[in-house]
Length: 374
Image 1 (cartoon, rainbow, N blue to C red):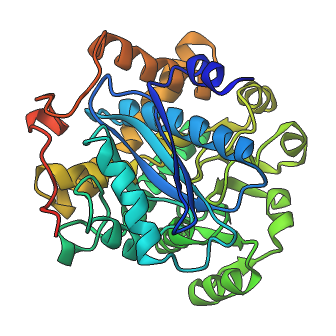
Image 2 (cartoon, rainbow, N blue to C red):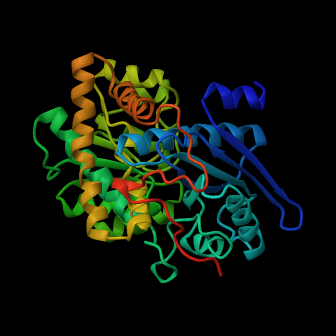
């Protein structure tokens, strides 16, 4: 498919290709929708096999961010940036980060950057030296820091709604939960579950990391490729997307899926396959919205207690998705997408946010620059 056809097919407003020879920067920035407000989404530093793979990823992820923001009740749209690197774990140079920062700044606030896979709070701090349109910087630089803890709070809130759906009881005590991926968010999820009295099993492609988290929490650790086979109440995918495909559905020994990863299902047909097997799926973009909720708070005067309270409300949002799915006899993923798209169409009909637009941010505050650029 041609690039412009791919953009049009998914309803994107804008796709920017960025290349900077001196720093070796190769990146793409996708703005999916600004109907409800400026787009927000993380910068992903990743090794892609090809530019075509990176394009597919940035388009899919930015669309998911629109759904996530809409479902969370935020006045913002979805965007995403991907930076093609050889090794995501190698620290980025200041010059490269400034180059992607300048590209973000050229969009004048239509895209608001945040931390994503491969990125660090330090990366956000350096980018903020050349553009104010970046979130997730350290508190010392005027931001809220790493959003991972708030994301985890939202995931656990969604998990309470999920176990209520399968058993009528929201308590996580005594539940067995398999956490796939214990990086930034997954480690926090595992800790919160342990504190809630759940029995936790962890798996990660980095076996040492899995072992350390398991040891600290008194949890069990299994090989990364065995986590889908763990018998449990809830499987919590907290790594990369696409882990639940048609073949994985047949392997699963869980009663429900609720995790932090984006795009957990390989494609939309898996939503129905899970429902047919009786596995309750908490749509990922609903469950993992705590991070974007936290970042949105930076624009109205950051309050961590308020961010935590809003992330806790994900339990009610998830319950509403399950109720809609039952009422309409459709899988939960389809119900969540329909609910989010309806809000975009009704509240954002015919709108696109542009620099200088007085469109409201969360609850009536106008969008403003986060901080001056040094």
